Length: 113
Length: 116
Image (cartoon, rainbow over all chains, first blue to last red; front, side):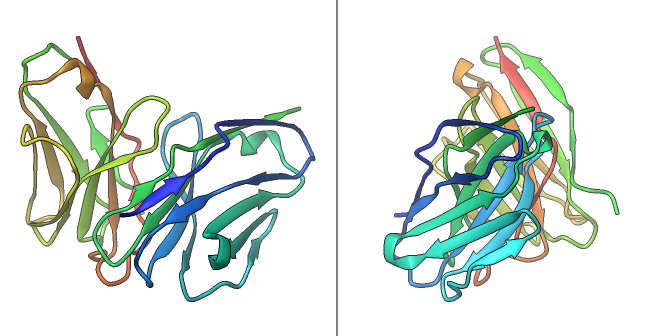
């Protein structure tokens, strides 16, 4: 069975603070892919990153960084120097070698100016 | 290039009615997936279609059906609507069938369905 848990329902930070969004996953597959999506108030999910289970190297893209740790089944997402435009709901998702994506329940991030 | 488009944007139906939602994928994308997103929850997978064939089905009743056309656009049909079917219905397209590598999916803006 595949499952994604995002324990943080809502987070509020003041602009320019760093924030980490947690994602814990469960799967019995040895090959799987993890994703992060952003859903702004407009509603359209925006793809942020995809990582496969064989690549545990951390990734940085501008103010965004991702920490993948197989030992703890976690794929956490950090936003550095947060901005108001980062306010959105963020979803972590898992897909193995099947044809389904399993999404977490999302973390609503509010960045206060 | 145009992104994934969905129609209609909003829809209000009465219990027991039938609804058809439409989706046009990004040009060149052959895979279309449908998701249901209830308020405050993550998207729940309903169907995936690739090359007009159903390649995956989530845990939804038979009232939900879909199809994909030769131009790769897709329709989601829901019969005998229930109040609990009220949700945002998202369509996503990707370059290829998920198996073996699930490519990133690109989502449309969704159709907001309200059942009264």
